Length: 189
Image (cartoon, rainbow, N blue to C red):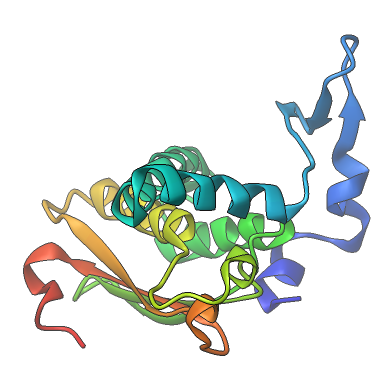
């Protein structure tokens, strides 16, 4: 597990201890209705979108869904951290790790340059091997949306974009995401 996991989640508060059922038989994690499904279902949905509508549509749908969720979750999380954006983002990464999205690690976090790199091990991209291109569009969206929320919360008029520079589906040992300002993006390698 990552250091962030142990920093924010005590052993007594593991994921499973927060599971319960409501009076209608819905599974809850805390007070949120959840589903527990094999990761393969998620990757199969993405593959089905790609097979039917093409890789570009799959990338757009998955990225936009992730972006919306990342932005929404961070807008709630940031308040709990008194606008300490790095701690809020680390906590968000802990949420993703404990929910099975992979083990996330910050490689670069430069708020002055609005440049961020995040490494993800054990992502759902493992289920989409082999691929000629990066495929973890949902995670890319989650990270970009969450960091855009943090950028907006600081009152910066900056639009972020991202690229998955490494992907396990392509044969890389892990996935890595670069998130930066749109206007600077072409300059960053």
